[in-house]
Length: 535
Ligand code: ADP
Image 1: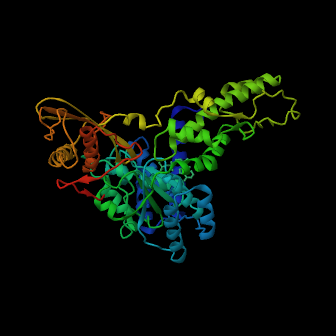
Image 2: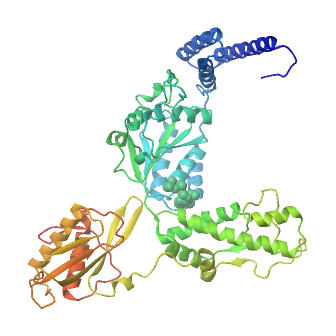
Image 3: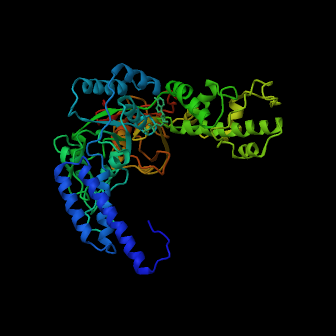
């Protein structure tokens, strides 16, 4: 805007002002021709009028201009046309995602109803499951099948309602909330908004963001959602909201009420192998500029990665480990190219960068030795076996064999639930001379401590029946005996009643001297009468 001319200062200023008033006129024209609803236009025109009278050195001038620019930019009436073809949607969902049948089925139902009835005021779908099971990626696929824009709004840690609803314009540095910002970014009024991690919304003195979200999600209210910054209503009813969460436990009840929860369970080993070979490996190869002729990962290796290097319900770490392998191989491949041909400097740089091979450099046709006159390193394609795996990823991080830990009486395996997926939980017990005390360690909650007392009481009352004795052969188990129960992974807080049956088993093993089977893990609450309650 600022032109460098050799006119005296006063003239320069005048010229600038003229230009600026041109800008305001332009803005006014934009307001008049924009497709915004009448109430919004009236507000805007009023602001334009004020702007015309305002000296531009005033801080408010910039504020008002920003506001007006946002208003004309918002997609009041602009939308994409939905492409609703259930058959195509099914194919696309199947191509993008292996397994997760239940989720895909529900999503298709949802889309089918939309096809039949366009202005569906249906429930908001909420995908609940551990990290890395494909919740976000299904959301993206839904947008793709509908031909809609996709926008992700991360809600983790948001604890201020103006994050959702914006700040009033009286504040310095005020800005619209994330919903309006998202709409501005995608430029249409019917995108798919993925509200990521609704279970991690915070709460603070600045108001409850969940309450603000309620207004956004409620189909009865959201056709005139008022962002504090805009101060006029915006119709959100065309937006398709999908929420994701790790657990429903921490989603505010009122919010949960507006949503239909679809559980996305973790994957089994077999499913993970399929997902790796169908989706993750091809994707990683592509990202690293490698081809299947250069790198091969047999299923046995994938299984090795899954069992020894990752412990997760989803596939995110698996994906990362596969990425690490690709990087290591990229170095080898690039070195091979370097050795084989007199490379130009650009290629040498690429060899150093390894993984950042630019798209326009054709990968050398490796495997076809005649092609570019390359002398190939002998080991193409590089096959990753378990030894190579150890070289690249280091020693295994998780032991596979639990049986070794069960080689003596007084150890049992329980099952624990966490928002990140199921886990095995060991329970260890030992006894020593003492006065009948019970020591519990491993950061246990009160409920779990009570379970331990319950377990001991039941065992004591049934000691004769099951031939349980203490060290001196007495049926009075706590006679001259102390018991110590420990739940390893001592840094993790544990609670809940369902460890009961595991504790009983563990103690029964301790007092009977018999081993617990290593291929069984258990979970369930016990009662004083010895019943195991269903989950
Ligand atoms: P979440 O949102 O559940 O934490 P993401 O959607 O980000 O997980 O998924 C992580 C990665 O795993 C993505 O790259 C996704 O493509 C992949 N992924 C997860 N589940 C599947 C599946 N069933 N089929 C194919 N890829 C999957």
